[in-house]
Length: 448
Image 1 (cartoon, rainbow, N blue to C red):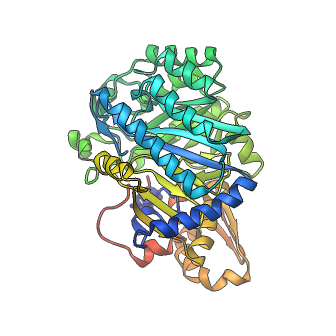
Image 2 (image 1 turned 30 degrees about the horizontal axis):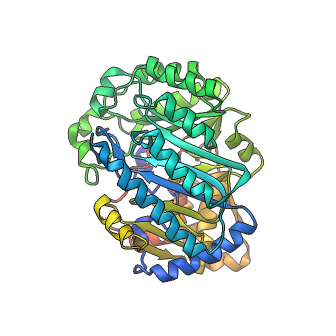
C-alpha cells in the first residue's frame, strides 16, 4: 500500500486545537467575556490584538467553496450588515474596557469587495477611531479580481491596507466553468498591476489543486501564468470535497476529481515550480518570496498560525466580527451564529451573537502548543512533566515513525522531509479529542 493511500483519511486542518467539531462547552457568554477581557489586558500590553471581519455576501456561487456565504445581487444588504458589524465592535469595546492596540485586521468572506468602497471605509474608520494602531500593524483583505475596483484598492490602501489576496484558483477555462469562477488572466493582471501601482507591498494568490477536470498540463499552465505575475505569497490549497456540508459541490461528481496519487502529483508539480522560481515553502500549502514577511518569520522561528491561516503576527487575542466568525483569546474560543438573519437579530438586541464556546483545559493548552509547533516549525519538544500525557500519542505515532515520516526522541518529535506532506496526519496523533470522540460521521476533508 502506498503512503498516500494509507494516510488519505479525513483530517482536520488545525487552524485551532481543539478543532470546532470537538468544542464541548455550553454557550457561556459571560465566561467568554471574562476570558476575553483578561486576554485583552495582557495583549494590549504586549503584542496587540487581531481582528477578523467576515463579509459573507457574493453575487454568484463558486461551487468549490466551503466558506459561509450568502449569494445575492441585491446590494441593499450592505448597509444593515455594516451597521451590525459596527454595533458588534462597540459591544466588544464594552467587554475589553480599554482602547485596543490593533496589530492585524483581515477582511474575509464571502467576497469583501462585494461591498462598496464607501461602506468598507465607514466600517474601518469606525474601528480605527476607537483604537490605536501598532507601528508594524498589517491590514489585509480578500478580493475577487472580477469585481475589485480602483476605488476599492485606493480607499483601503489609504486606510492602511497594504496586503491584498486575490482568489485565483485556476486559469483553465474548463475548470473555471465547472467551479463557476470565471476570470481571465488579463483581468487578474490588470488588477495586480493596479494594486502595485497604488502601493500595495504584498500580493497573495489563492490557488487550489484537486479541482474538477484539473490535469498536470492545466495546473502547469496555471502556475506558469501565476509565476509570470510574481505574487509575493501563494497559498496552494487542497480542494476540500465536502458535499455533505456544501451541496453546491454536487454540481460535479467525484469522477470529475483527481484523487489520491493523481491529486498529490498536482501539488508536487506546483511545489517544484514554485521552489524552482525562488519561492520558499512555508508550513502547509503556502509559499512566499524569500524577503516576504512569512519567509522571514519562518527563518526567525516566529511563524504563527490561527483561524486566518499562517501569519508572522503573533497575538493571543483574535476578535472575530460578523456571521460565523471565530474569536480566540488563547484560553477560550467562541463562534458567532451562522445565519445572517440570526446575527442581525441578536446584534440589534445588543447581544453578542455567540453560538458556540470552548474553554480550554490545561491538557488542551499543552496539546495546542505541540500541534501549533508542528504546523509552524515541523518540530516540538516536551519535558518530563508531560510524559504521561504523551504516552498514547507516542503510540499513535509509531506507524508514522516506521514509515519515516517523523523522528521521535525522549523529548521531541520532528517531521522529516518525507513526512511534510502528511503533517495533518502527524498532528492528528496529538489530537486527543479527535481520538476520544471519533465518529463515523463525515466531518473533515481528506488529508491528500
